[in-house]
Every structure is written in structure tokens, then in C-alpha cells.
Image (cartoon, rainbow, N blue to C red; front, side, top):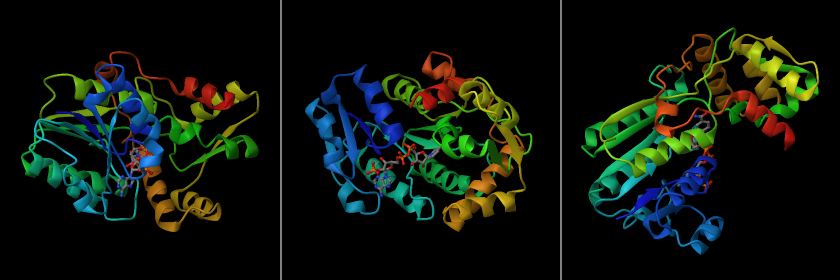
Length: 284
Ligand SMILES: NC(=O)c1ccc[n+]([C@@H]2O[C@H](COP(=O)([O-])OP(=O)(O)OC[C@H]3O[C@@H](n4cnc5c(N)ncnc54)[C@H](OP(=O)(O)O)[C@@H]3O)[C@@H](O)[C@H]2O)c1
């Protein structure tokens, strides 16, 4: 019996594995990775490593065992058939008889196209009969704070989110919630709407970057089409730019404002304010 984390060498996965290692012995943790070399440090610490690819279902044979608790971290391959990728993991988990499958989904309020794969995966999870936990993760602070270079260069935060408010949290916060579910009891067939304790709009975000950087930064609210054009002009592939513009339209409608309190409740501590992540990013 193990706690199994897919996407374990990704940004979120790394936080989850570190959080697990603070709570359970390393030999009770399995990291599912595509590239074993990226997990050498984990292997050295006693974590079991399983090499598998969502695109090759046969590689998932033997990864899971009866009684395992599994965290399926959603695939980053937006534009590919992510639902098929997730179903391959779900099928292998069901066949093995796992005790729980937790899935990193998107907020139930999100209508943007990006949510389609998550809704379809959730439906497959429910249909499978496998005990599940839906971790409907809101947006990461890092989606913004890892992209400060153009903001500082142009003195502007450019988004198509109007005056919409968004409640983000750090990846570490979402990871802490996942760790609580994987190591705790009573999360079977629960759905959590996860987001930050505090919300901001992009005028406030620009002001926060201004304060932290000492540079004048304004919020330049543009229409979704204009934003898409700016992104493609900067080299973002058109389909992905359309997805990001769609997310901003959802933010404008308040769809990424999460008020459930589930995240800080599960993590057992307040979430990380955006200001803290801005300061951390500027320190580099
Ligand atoms: N809530 C948000 O704001 C937000 C933002 C961005 C993404 N997301 C979603 O949340 C997930 C986790 O976020 P993150 O920041 O940790 O993303 P990330 O760093 O890109 O990690 C994605 C993980 O998925 C793994 N992966 C991708 N394709 C795979 C495949 N075919 N087979 C097996 N593993 C595969 C990657 O493996 P490698 O380590 O080998 O590359 C990586 O470990 C993302 O994948 C995405 O679905 C959410």
C-alpha cells in the first residue's frame, strides 16, 4: 500500500511529494514520473519511483496496488487528448483496486474552455466507481508572479479580465491540501472548491507589483481578442492564447473567485497572499 503521486516531477507534484515526506516514511510514497533521471533525488531518499506515460497505457500496468491512495495530477498537455490521458490512469487505478483517487480539477464555477477536460475527467471518475476526491484547484499565484519580466519591462499588467476579482493561492498551498487528503481520513467522494483566502483585481495586482518593485505599474485592461493577439505576438501558439483569453473572460465574470474556505481549512493554515508571492518572485 502506497501513496502514489503522478506528475511527481512537475511543479505541483514536487511540493506534494515534499509534503508527504514530512508526514509518512519515504518507502510509503511512490512518485510516477516520465523521466527517471528527474527523480534521482527522490529515489536517493527512498521514494519508490514508477516510470509511466499517460500516453502509453501499458506503462501504467503495475504502477498501482490494491489499497493505494493516488493523486492524479492533471496533464499539462493542453491541446492533446487530456481526457484520454486521465482515463488511462483511472483505468489502471480501478483495475488495481485503489482505495482513493484524488484528481486536481478546476473550479466548478469555471465555464472557460480550459475546464472542459476537467469536467469530462470528473465524469469519468464518478462513473468508474473508484472512491474519489475532487480537488478543484483555483488559480496559482505563480501564474502571474512567474511572468513579471514583461510587466516590469512595460510598466503594465495587461489582461482581459476587466474588473474581475480572483482568489489565487500558491502551488504550495494547493499541495498542502492534497497532502491532507492523501494522509487523512474521510475525504472519500468529496469535492473541494479550492482558492485563496484573499482576492484581488488586476488594478490591485498592478499596485502590489508597483509597491514591491518601486516601479510605476498600471493595469491595462484590454478586450479578449486584443489580449489573444498580444499573446500570439509574443509567441504563444494560437490555440493556447485563445484558452488564456477565455480564462480572462471567466475572471471578468467572477468565475475564479472562490469563497468556500476549503483550501485553508484542508491545509490547516491561511493561504499565501499574492503580495508574498510577488515579493518572493522579485527576490528571485
Ligand atoms: N490551477 C492552475 O493555476 C494551473 C496552472 C497551470 C496548470 N495547471 C494544471 O495543474 C497541473 C499541475 O500543475 P504544475 O504547475 O505542476 O504543472 P507542470 O509543472 O507542467 O507539471 C505537469 C506534470 O504532468 C506531467 N505530465 C505531462 N504529460 C504527461 C504524460 N503524458 N504522462 C505522464 N506525466 C505527464 C509532467 O511530467 P514531467 O515532469 O516529465 O514534465 C509534469 O510532472 C498541470 O499539469 C495542469 O493540468 C493548473
